[in-house]
Image 1 (tube, rainbow, N blue to C red):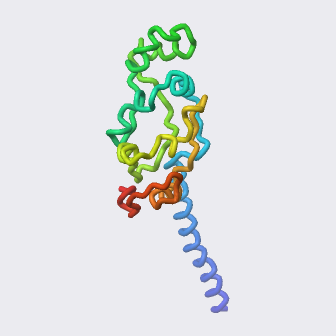
Image 2 (cartoon, rainbow, N blue to C red):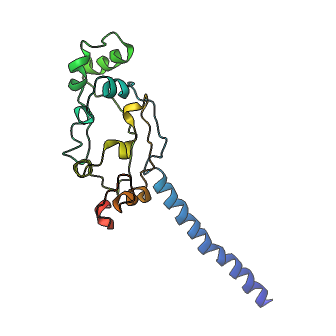
Image 3 (cartoon, rainbow, N blue to C red):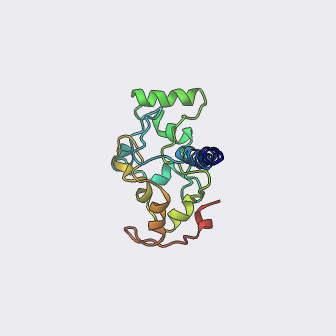
Length: 183
């Protein structure tokens, strides 16, 4: 009788570590899953921005709108005055430009939806990457051809490390110890 009771207690207590392991795994997965965006992420923006027209037809450089990409950790989004500098006249009757003008009139920024998101514990200084000759397209894909921007790369750690170790095309090399990218 005593041995049966002991076996029953052992089975019950054996479930406790398994429960804690499962809870820890669930917490880790849930904390990480919202930390970064996935490849293919392509939210509909409040104002449709046609990159092909601006980049291919008008020959605008990425830095015209994303003015801080070569001098700041964050590439920056254009100020409304940058957009309205042309669009008070150019295309003013088009519905998307009228949406843009509405934000301008209300003195509100366009509430753009972030597409390329990295976890909070990752630091990605745009200026270092641009300064090293990494093109915008290396990480962001051929945005100049996208009617609606989507995330073309995983932006996961393995993808980044392959670039830092020279396994990219063209081959780049950079430090890849943990503190290079992680806070």
